[in-house]
Length: 299
Ligand SMILES: [Zn+2]
Image 1: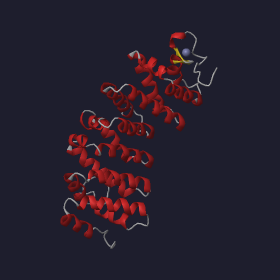
Image 2: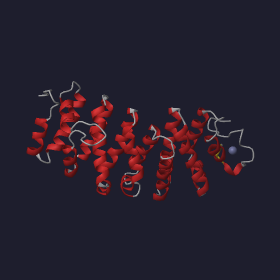
Image 3: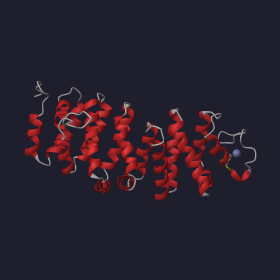
């Protein structure tokens, strides 16, 4: 067997040569992804071969049922694997499939499959969010699909800002950044979800102490500040009020970061302050001047 051969002797019997291309049995590849008795190393090697040999992917795509089976097995791996190298390779192959078959219905199928897993007791995992972020990089117009016909997916993404895992929240911010970087998508975003995103981001910023999450959150806030109506919402959210989520006002958050010891946080803070002030300098500068914790003087 050469290093490129992918034939799984446990399951290959009966597959026949019509499934083979360049030493790789497509039927074996699809079946081995779901088997717990096939090692992670072998599964990863099979996916590497799928990426290397175009003829294998063509054979995988040529019938709809086979294509759907393959994608479904990759998505199951995305949600069940724990090995990071297998997850990375699975994400690469999933992305390659969407580039090989640039078809809106196919992208919707993938979004729906992910959403059904998220709402079927499987958590909004880091790997699924990472994949969604990369999918938006590869297909920017998909942002508009999320804010129009697949709001349920976006709502699940936003809810993941309430989990405790900060790596997951960083990935959520990446997805939101892509959404807010695509103006056609922002136009379709309902006011209720805009408001919810504002509250969730302030809540996240008020409760994190990690630089990575703070920087990613502020990256989204800065993108949101391109829109004057959103700036008004962000600047008028005061202290949580009747909202069950606690948060600090944006001027106070930004002022604290400006006075932090870290250059990177000071820089993102200044950028956000400028992005706010450009809309109404007089009105919003007084909000920044007056922002103080009770009994605490910041400047
Ligand atoms: Zn086989």
